[in-house]
Length: 258
Image 1: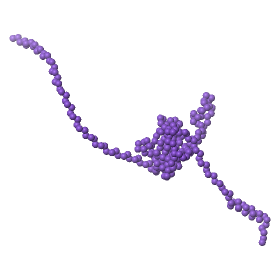
Image 2: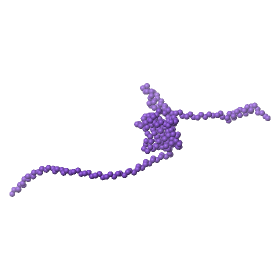
Image 3: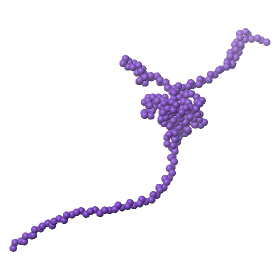
Image 4: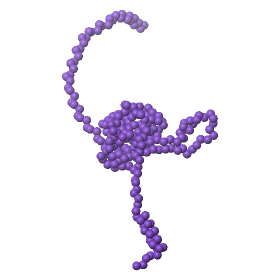
């Protein structure tokens, strides 16, 4: 039996070692993605309905950071230090935050659909400024999601919901009515709190409901004719006292001369 030369034996051993290293993999430990941290939301007035016990904390749907592309130069010493802030050219960050209070059992909310929504809106101080339940008929409103018909916080705030679900939205002023607000209802720089319910979604805009036909009016009750008024006693007017005029004395006609 022939034996391999030492050099070939070493080569075969090295190849076997390399093959063993390439075919055996060390165990890989997958790290689960970190859960999003709780968002910092304003302290709400007790006038706003409390959420059910065990409701999770608010999470951001997304965060926007603005970085100005301009800088201030040649600033006069007469200007105050908060000039950049007053001009609105400082960096800022804000989030659209949410809490799902009920997970719907219907289809996942899809973009560019018509949503039927029940909602109630509050200011942070507890003032309720609008609610679909207070509208005539208490019907939900209909919007085209992503159609720029509503504030940006609504145009993006239903992502991830299912039909039948309920959510509380914390909408910063940048995604609501801006720094100017909408007086007299919405103050300047007002953060809005909305409790929303996704009632339905459809490809076409739902037709408005036909108002119910009012019941026929009840026949008017016939009232007895009023008695004729008793004529007032007529007192004959006293005749006017007339002083007879003295007959005018007519001079006799002068006979013509013969």
